[in-house]
Length: 465
Image (cartoon, rainbow, N blue to C red):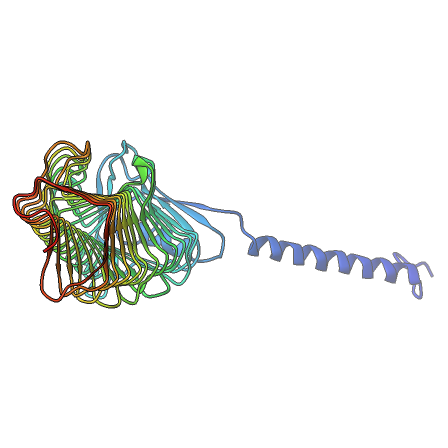
């Protein structure tokens, strides 16, 4: 009898079959691995429809299917388009780049509007929990809650968007609570390139909130908050421009021109830093001015207000606000530094752009603060008011002069006014030309150190009473 194929009892054939089986298993395993490690995908939004192939909702859903960082682009004909979700958009659970600057016709102004007035009472615009995501070039408005919510994971970038404006960039179409809420760390809102500027205006509550201790080490750079897209007139957020509530070590602004935020026109404070926040930095911004730094677009309350510990307020121009420029208040506000600012003038320190109360208020128990090397002139009341504080230092400031230290630029009341304050140190200041006293000591006040000051040409007495 002849046998076809492997002989019965042959060990060689069995070995070959075993090897082939192992190869097949390895190949299957490799295919499964490659499927799970799918390469980055780009999803194109081609329609303004809320659902179906080519919709924004569909692109978000597809990007959520794996952990890979995907890209969503827009090619909906050409020019300005509006997407109107009819329900809450998908929560972003894996990293994604949403880039609306890819819409044909884009030339530096956002063209894709995501309008939320039909999305439901619980709807935010975008809910991003993935981290390492980017949102670029969208208009997000009219949602019943927050325009953009960043939670859980950080390292996100929010750049080049209009949050709370119409698609003209000139008028309000506010989200019904806040523009952006950050409850995560190491995010960047804006950037130093003009193309990265967000305009966050017209929202019914805060423009931008850094919320809870989860909001740490975020950077807020180069944005317009409370103005139109041109930075020439107010489109107010209904409360404050930026609010920090519990956030730690966040930086608003920076030391370069490109990192400057314009925080103006809001109905309450420009920036408010509430206890128990700590160690936040507000640096290099225009607060209460237009984008040119030449005229007032005042905030409706204070320019910068803090009731938290160790706030650094440095190299800002804080002018044109309805009440005081900078406020340190309550016993929870301590060990803060107000340094190198122009308070009550234009950006060049030549002309008055008055805060309508005081330049700097240190009040209601705020202690151990430093006010140093500031130009505090042109305000309607006093340059510095210290009320119910203790152990504060006012050092090497110029009050009542322009930046050249010669031209008159008076405060409307005193250079420095103290009431119910103890242990204050007043050293090395140039104080003059004010319409009240150079230094006025009110009720129950003591001075720990008074030395090295030049006090001249004030309308009333120059020296402390």
